[in-house]
Length: 470
RNA sequence: CGGGGAGUGGCGCAGUAGGUAGCGCGCCUGCUUUGGGGGCAGGAGGCCGGGGGUUCGAGUCCCCCCUCCCCGACCA
Image (cartoon, rainbow, N blue to C red):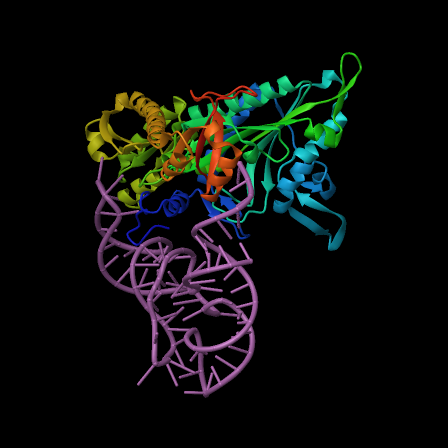
């Protein structure tokens, strides 16, 4: 990590390198021993657990229940849905041996669970009374990837995948959109503090086996796009492939309409690339494993006790607080380490402060410091956390807007995508335009209304959000 | 798979007339320090990617293999 002086490569100088150094320097993750795999370290996993909690709560509010399906799937399942197999078979890992012998039927390691989930949906769904069936699972999935990068693209990653079945197409559409808006968009904006573009994927970018894919797209600090959450309408494709039918009120057998939706540990990569700065990670308070670290500047009998008292008071007010009393390590070293990890607020307390009944409060957002009376500390910290949350979003939004250019045609689109996104009438692009853009490594990230809102099904006069993506 | 680069202590690297491996950071011990990457002293840690060859002697030269990284095609 880092260069000889120990500082990070500036973001503007070499963004990918900066990213790797932040991941390493904040102790978020390490490369696993098998190509493309990732070890998520405690700090990174702490962020993931908080994010999981936020997503899980919203998923449950949307009525879905958690369940778990097996890691191994019979190879034959994959072939049941034509587009799905075409999309996924190149990237599946296949287990051919078990117990020292070749398996009679090889099993695949799930790249996603539509097939196995729907195999069971076919058993569980008999009547319209069984609908809607709303299932979510938290799991790992495995895909063969050409190029991998920690969090952004790894051979194995953690995610949640939702799978639902509905009686009507309208219900399925509503649910897919509801998940996109109330679960993904809300978590990404209000918890992760990442501004997003929401919309519909083009046919070219659609999920393999879906009839429609809805997505949240974020803009990273280098102007490139990252897909942060997707919600798919599967129509009746899987229902027909897996024979998922229910008897309606009249006793007529009908195929269900389905959705599937997912968000992964990739979100953490997005978090780093949106909010990180030249000093390391900056975590939004809602996702910081420690929101406040109380640093004992130097060891003496009073400061340790004072730090403990401060930490206790803050904990009682519901904050996640950590004490750093590792005074054997120099103060500067420790300050920089917490800064790299992105802890939103540091409280520094030493003999000088104590003599004045004060402590220094440092905001990670802009590294500003202020000396605050001990009695006002709790409210000062709360205020700083709230300000941090707002400021991170504001800064990301400003960046995104500055790097999103409304343009009129394909040529201008190409130009604008050199530094960010282009917003262009979809009618100016079309499928032929998409092919042309693809040659420059540029894709349509999503289609939305001109005002940025989600389009209705079948609506036209949409604009395309176009950019380079991860 | 196409094009480019690299494999040497944990990390980043140096090391060609072939002569028995070094630097920075990190790590350990002690003293001292601690308000933004401390100082001094001592110390640990390497079949130099693998195999073969040339040679008295190979990190260095030759042959074969493997792996990793970067750029492109695939992707949550």
